[in-house]
Amino acid sequence: AQSVSQHNHHVILSEAASLELGCNYSYGGTVNLFWYVQYPGQHLQLLLKYFSGDPLVKGIKGFEAEFIKSKFSFNLRKPSVQWSDTAEYFCAVNASGGSYIPTFGRGTSLIVHP
Amino acid sequence: GAVVSQHPSWVICKSGTSVKIECRSLDFQATTMFWYRQFPKQSLMLMATSNEGSKATYEQGVEKDKFLINHASLTLSTLTVTSAHPEDSSFYICSARDLKLRENYEQYFGPGTRLTVT
Image (cartoon, rainbow over all chains, first blue to last red):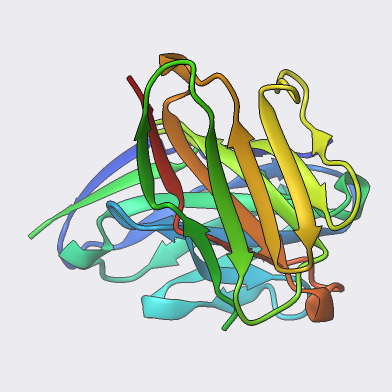
């Protein structure tokens, strides 16, 4: 079974700072990778996803993530965060071995100070 | 994009009563729907996978007699919390897969239902 680790549980940044949230997974086969965001009081929204092709994926709101297969990683980045990026961020993985049912990381709480 | 709705968005019930939560895919057909539970500041915990026309598959540790799931059509799944207790208070989220995007296995999430049992 696959598992997902998000090492940064709480991140606090000032506006305009750069962001990188770590995500590592454990599964030896082909995976699909996702980053979701949950703004306070709102539902999960898909930020970006990787299925195949270019390992550098660009998503909404200026976010991007890079799939590094050799490191089993899919880190999320944003060059300059805004106060409105304050939210919970979840990394998720699904794979054929798990019937494509996603496994979520425990999430990272990001607080951006204006 | 694909839209998933949940009803109600929040509900308060007394201990011992049952509560039904609906999950609908509004603009697509979903062969599979998923039910998650989310505790404050924690990740989503998969409770069960619901396939249209068949019995739900429950994750280990989830009581199937307490959390009744019905997937009667390609656009509707329901979760009934029976004989609710305060420890069942939580945020329940459903998600659905688009039949036409089967090869991608992407899920679309509903807005969640906040259940408070008093």
